[in-house]
Image 1 (cartoon, rainbow, N blue to C red):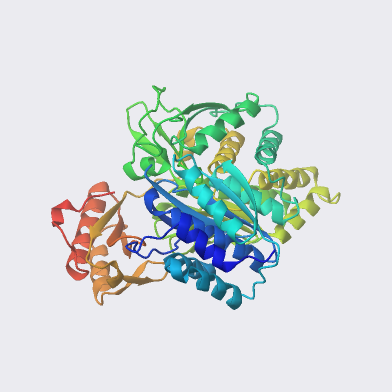
Image 2: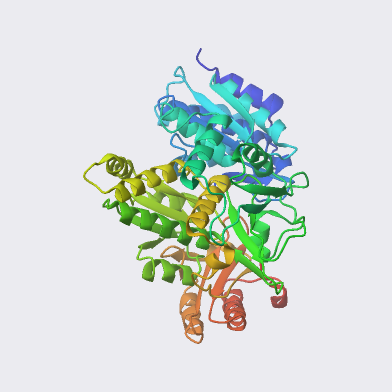
Length: 549
């Protein structure tokens, strides 16, 4: 039945009103994100948009994930998932922004405009998958999404509480006619567990590697789902879950550990050098860490994960003898030592893109095997159809040696262990555990592959963040005129110095990143650059209150 657009407006006015005082918001890398009290009308309209998007894509499934990831408990958010598990097409981000910001009175006309402009027939089939994290307000916001889908007569499947990567996986499975896997939680878990066990074989421990792992679930959905995995590990991995039933992301989780460079609260008393891991509230980021005998904390973040996995994959590709184009994608926030290690030790080309997973994911598609990770621990590996074809053929090629065929088979299992659709904390964790086990490494061995340069991230409050514009993957400041020249001059005074500035995407803040040969030099470099930014970009507040974050 054709949707009645007047009913769309009437339903919005009665149940999902937009306050006249509500400020405009913008769909960004993380979708829409705000205090939960401000999001009911946004969720309803994203249910509408997901239905329109599904029709525009010929009835393919579109996902709607309700989460604020690493944000505090009072926040929530929503983002749409395109048919192959990727982030929403950038052109449609603008449509999302326009739809959310119109008044209730103009909502009917805006829906009609999108339908006309995109050639959408609202008689066509539409299907939307919905998932949410564990925040107490997520169920109510999910109802608003479901109402939006229903208003446009779309079909919906509500998965309830799932990790963000799981919903991406479900969407991809459905749109590939199950070629990628079964679009169920059991199907997701079974695929990863089967590949993990097949690669590991019968050995639980090897060399310096032990199978015990302490897992910080950030009091979010990642803790719930890991408890399900533990039941299926059969001793292959001994996971001790903590931070499983408190306030989401509060003094715990991947973002807390990365930002504060220390272990999360809630970590039980553990032995020195114990292998620890933290995920974030929706389980799409992961970082590793340990505290040594001297009580010194050591972090192994997304840069480390990228180099570890890239090295492992490169070895397998070389062993099976398949000609495959492989590359690694980073942002400007990647530690310079990691980039040097990748290029000069692993001999893997590196590309740099602007901050945001959508940019990394898009660039990774240029390679047969594209590895991408942000320093915060969000990333994955993408394998092209041609790469999978070549690897599959090599695994069956009798003209190759047994060692080559075995390497190709191992690569195929590694592909199955990878959630290619988006960064997935649990999939990435299993990949890291696989590589460490294969090498017989503990975290000290991993840390010893190269030495990170000391680095710091600062923020400066400004009157208007838009005075800062950048180019070259955010590494070069274009405006205000003269600011980049000043930064360049400061950097030349520091050994191994590097610094760049970029505006926040959501608040009037400019972020300053710096790295150098020592902690002292790094901090001094950052402060000098921050002061220049303060002077030239309209800094507000007291200088001495600019805090490292």
